[in-house]
Image (tube, rainbow, N blue to C red; front, side, top):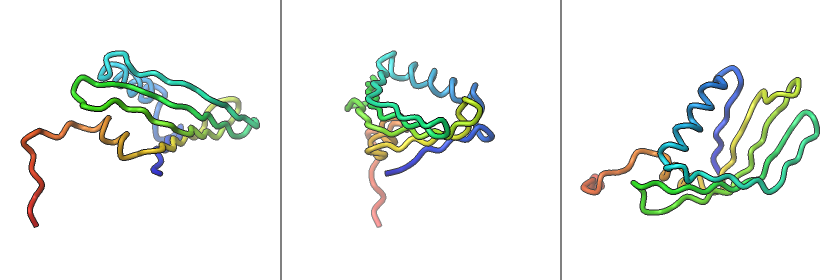
Amino acid sequence: MATWSVTAASTSRDAVLAFVGHAAEVTGGTLQLTVHRVLDDGEWGVALATYTATRPDRDRPLENNLAHVARLRDGRIAESWLHSRDQYAVDEFWGEPVPATAQPVAG
C-alpha cells in the first residue's frame, strides 16, 4: 500500500483545491466519493471511503477504497495521508496515458 502525504507546510489549500478541480475536469464530472465511516478523537481523524471515476482516455474505470488519515490542530487539518488499496491502479488512472505504439525496451 502506498501513501500520498500532504502537510500544511508543503501544500497550500489552493494547490489541493486545484488538484481536485483538475480531477473533476479530466473525469468529465464522474468523480464520486462515498464516505463509509469517520473516526475522530480531536487529535486524529480517519475517513474510510471509496472513490470512483471514469475518463474518456482510459479503458477501465477507477474504484479505489482508501483510508484518509489526518492529524488535526486547532480544529484544522495539519497533516494528511491517503492510503489507497491499489496504488498501481490509482497511478495508472491518474498518470499520463501510455501511447498505443509504445513497446517495452528489450534487454
